[in-house]
Image (tube, rainbow, N blue to C red):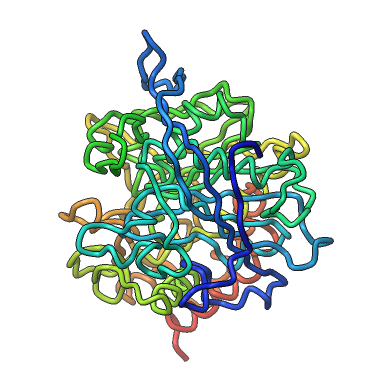
Length: 468
């Protein structure tokens, strides 16, 4: 690609692994990881003369200024080229914690897709004041000491350059991050803070760059990043949440699935948009922003521990970034919905097979509030089996806590007598739960291949609810 220099795979460094490389063994899943450095001139954007960045997301930008940059890609792909699916998931790596946290899961390695992390933001390279050692450059100077970032305003073009470097039209590169693989489609994805930036990218930069073939923003509060961060600086998150929510523009011509949880529902509500020929919104009732399931959270913690990183202490019994909230974190695992969303987005892009249109969480009032059933659980939305066959009250927030303290949500288990009144026997509970799983598969938000594992987890829960 003209104007961009790529080096790698990176083999030097004081540490044995790349930053945020998963701690579990990729080889067990037939995968390998390779890291590449890339750099050149990055462009920042500004609204075109006479235009505004409205809440409809139909933004018009112009190139504003350029600065040099050098950052990295972490490519995780099948080690056997014949098993590569043709799909690349380009992940805008999250830096909310003051350092990069990857979003790869074991479930995402089942279809031969490649996952590519992009260190798009300045915090990822430089850390935050008082914790600069968590930035790439200080964490391993031998490996990352030459990296440089001109500021978050340039992150959008850096993401574009990454997409083009791993895309189907990348051409014959002297150093190919995809090692000659036949890439058919590149999907942009990012969760939470990264979804905020991906929203801005889709609304303003994708129409100029056409670098993505689809997008999967996750756990978005509906806000979008700005383009006017001064050179050399990072964007202030409080300023982001001070702006009104925006829609993802509806004229992109590529498929977009927005997957959100109960935590974001009230914030996102003003920017809700109808499903269309190219967009879907999936809202998961009962789920919390950071509720990735015990196994996946354990993988994240293992990676952080290996790399000498820690999150702030959180809710009792949790490893969350929440702050001092003595409540039980929400246990609803919504990763099965993510697996379905990935498969649906791929089929939509590849074959034109549209995903199901699913109900949204019920909100009413001014300001809008989530409506709840007799058990205190949300009405509407994607119906997780935990809500269809409840044994607890699940919430995407923590009562009386601020947003950060609510990211892992909360739950209040029912007393034993209430559980036994709802389900007189272990088999009654399991039959109801398994039927709810089957309905989720039929509705399209669980995959059939995941059903037995989900049911097995419910059987373990049943043993605890109905001890012999």
